[in-house]
Image (cartoon, rainbow, N blue to C red):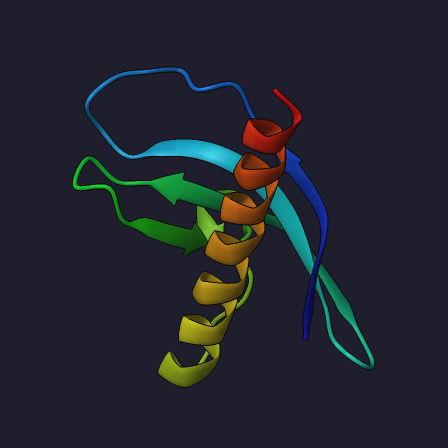
Length: 87
């Protein structure tokens, strides 16, 4: 599994969970697009699976979801570490 097409989004502010990036996930035999990385008010991240017409289009086992969440958070933190090092 690999996080691809990672696109950071401008921070809209506010006190609710905010979408800070969009990304796709690549597996050996498929690609899933439309994930959102959300930053919660308590500072933790959660990956939101793609949805269509208000319904999730994919569900994952708790273990796979944890891997997706951790990989997306790591991609976000790497991106911001690069931004800080370039300044």
